Length: 227
Image 1: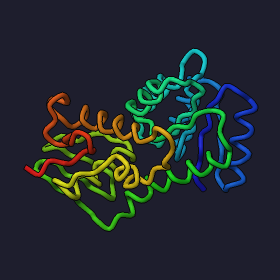
Image 2 (image 1 turned 135 degrees about the vertical axis):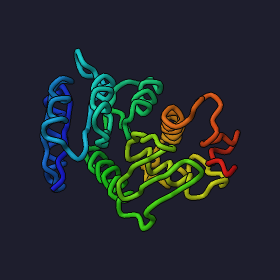
Image 3 (image 1 turned 90 degrees about the vertical axis):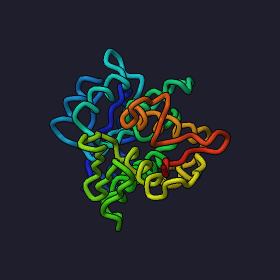
Image 4 (image 1 turned 120 degrees about the horizontal axis):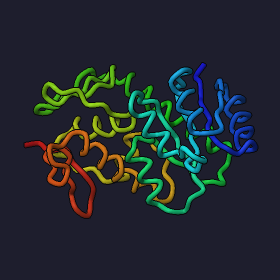
């Protein structure tokens, strides 16, 4: 049974999420503030975290930063904020998906299933290793190496990188990349692909401003270099 950590300072929201996720067959643990969320992530080692962005004191962005120091657990952000920049910052820090409040509890369950399936799908891939130049992707272990350097990536980042690296030179639209990582299409979500690409470039590229691995095809999308 998969364990889901739900983090929110609203008791009503905690109860709704817990009830629906438990009914869907998940073991649910909860936290109502950022410090408790970081502690629960490290001690309970959940399979996925549903994290409210607007927590008091230690907010959701700070929690994501803390968790990403030692864990690649999938994170779905919940936010009532209207600013697109807040969502993109969260994705750049390593969150896998986001939902804007108010939302349907059934949609939350669907998103949880999608993100978990995304992580499991990487491990279940028939391709064992992907090698392009000095980049190596160990698919079953979700490990990325650049030369002799090991690169920490989230499950979503790995899936996105694998889709590009499997077919160097092929141009992918954002919608195609969204489909490749088994995302849930909704308004503005294609912009999340840009956030994940930015994050991957920060981790992989010697100079993210002049990428040599993940290239932008202006007006279309992205491709992995074939030179």
